[in-house]
Length: 168
Length: 118
Image (cartoon, rainbow over all chains, first blue to last red; front, side, top):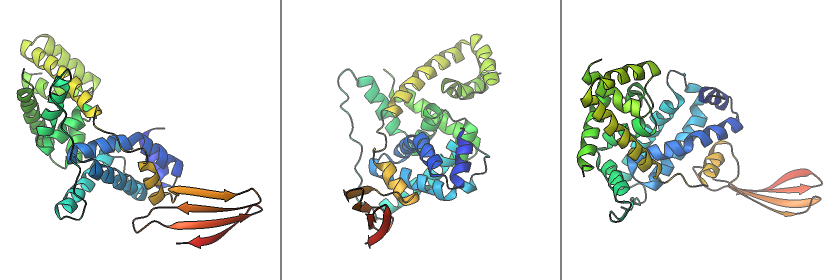
């Protein structure tokens, strides 16, 4: 069953369809939230709140974008609130990501991870959505709520910065 | 297609997000353009490395579904039962935004009677 049909069934209150949707997207939403927030606890909160919003608001999905775009849009909104709550001190101090040891045979992988982490959040997000999720610029623009040209510009700058960081 | 257009498309091609028709046009350009060829090779390599890097991010905890299910489908987080087929007691521990409800159900000869709600 395709994703959009699954959302229709969720809108009708089908718990099995909701479980299936969760299986398809929870991991992707979590990784996306982690890309935005760089914090495991917040990423889990965002993933859970996103899935709960989907359960409550599946009827609002109009099918004008991919289901993944819709979900990432909700997750982005939840991440924004999670970050604001944390800034206000309403949440426990975050457990930050441990930086891996850059020495040894994994050096290149570690450098790539560090290069990604060093990108400004909006550029890191574009890199994740384009390279990991394979979303076209048009869909990324919908998720970020910006014109397509802004996405292209963020991609250009992100690529240039990654190339600089990863230069041998 | 010119080089600027090709460079916009290269990341999408590398991420396999480019429609087939555009991909064919891109390759046609790249075959005859050494600069874009180098850009494509470099981007393909970067894409491979980035996908690996993102894949190494931690996934969600295994128990996360139980919390989501408890707050949407009303499924219990934990169910503990004692007794036999004739008579038994089941305690369901849930989780909501406002607390951790505990519900007890007594079953006698197949009939279930709620006996506890905290």
